Length: 212
Image (cartoon, rainbow, N blue to C red; front, side):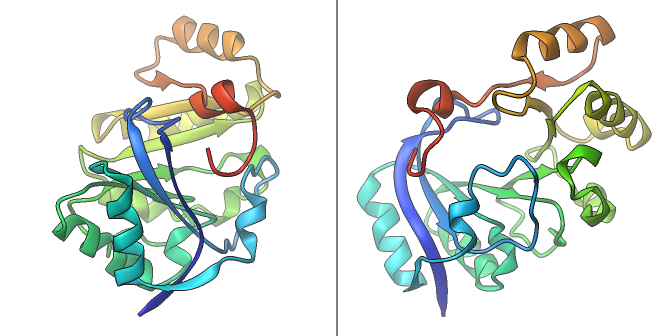
């Protein structure tokens, strides 16, 4: 079985509760969505076909137990489910970054799913698979990337409607260079929301570019 891989690289995890941990990233090519704030459009195409055994060998070379499978949208390639299982079987601590438009129920239960819920201003709100929220585990996380105060208010409503914070940790993240992190922090504090406000550490350290 082969997967189209755009890049495999070693860096610090910039988001989620794993922020700051040395991690190997496996970025798959392709994505069915076109979020207005996408920072990985370069991964929509290109890359090279790799056997899962080749991917595993590249991951092992990085010498860390933390692996993040990302994209694009990694679940758009059916072989991703096999890769996730192989990584777990090999003893890695695996997280999956997925855009929320594909059913996560087949994902190996040992994987920590970082599930985006797309907001109205992302341009992809209609592609949210809401049934994914029923498959969340305590080890998973739900992320809202916020383009504006209106997106924040919408996310706050969804948070309450689906009782997401009772199921797993919730992340609120400002769109880079569009929403002030200070403003978002003040909104979260004022509303006493049960969420983790986050910024993208890798962009603070190295800017907005591939391979970080």
